[in-house]
Image (cartoon, rainbow, N blue to C red):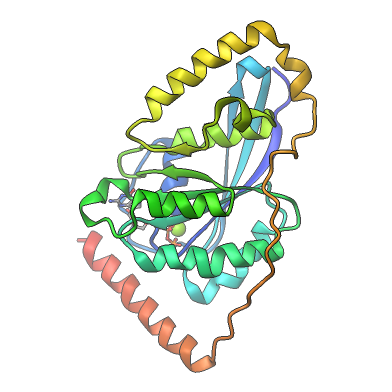
Length: 258
Ligand SMILES: Nc1nc2c(ncn2[C@@H]2O[C@H](COP(=O)(O)OP(=O)(O)OP(=O)(O)O)[C@@H](O)[C@H]2O)c(=O)[nH]1
Ligand SMILES: [Mg+2]
C-alpha cells in the first residue's frame, strides 16, 4: 500500500449539533453523552485504505467550537481545508439556518483551496422530533454541490459511509459520474452500496483504474463562487446571543449530567 495521502477535514456547525460525537464515533467507535460544549479545536486522525485503488487516505480531522462567541476561531482551520463538513441537527431549525446563513457563507469567502463539501443531517435517531426534512437538507446540499449524509452519532449510522464517499471522491475524480451517488440516506445506503460495488467490479474488468487515480484530484471538487455576505451584528445583539447560548449550555448540562 502507498504512503497515505494526507487530507485535512474540518467540521463546522452550531454548538450541540454533534460534531465531536461524529468524530468520536468515526475514530473510536464510541458515543458519550457529552454534557459540555467543546472549548477548543481538537485534532484526530484515521487512515482508510482503498484496496481497489491501491491507495490510502489519512483523514486529519479538526473539530471546531460551535458556540457563537468563538465562531471566528474556526476560520484558522477551515481556510486551507481539503474537505469541509457542515453539520446540523435535524431537530433544530436554527442549526440548519446557521449553516445556510453563516457557516457556508463564511467558508465560501475564506476557503483558499477548492474543498469537497459535505452537508450532514445528524441525530437521525430523533426522527420523531424532526424539524428539517430529508428533502430540505438534500435540496440545499444539491444547491451547494455538497455530498449529503444523514447520520446518527448515537446509533453510529452513516458516519463511516460519509468518509468512505469523501475518500472515493478524492481518489477518483469520476466517482460521481460513474456511480451517480452523492448522498447517504441511512435507510437505503447498503442497497445502493451493493449496486455500486457490482458496478465497480464490472467496470474494473474493462478499465485500468490505476491510471485514473494518477489524474488530478481536483476536477470533481466544488467550486465556491458566491460572494461573501458578512453579517453586521451589533454588540448588543451579541450580548443577548451569548446569554441565550449560556442558557442552552446550562440546559444541555441539566439534560444529560446527573
Ligand atoms: N440523540 C442524539 N444525540 C446526539 C447525537 N450526536 C450528538 N448527540 C448529543 O448532542 C449533544 C451535543 O453533541 P456534541 O458532539 O458535543 O456537539 P458539538 O457539535 O460538538 O457541540 P460544540 O462542541 O458545543 O460545538 C451531546 O449531548 C451528545 O451526546 C446523535 O446522533 N443523536
Ligand atoms: Mg464539540
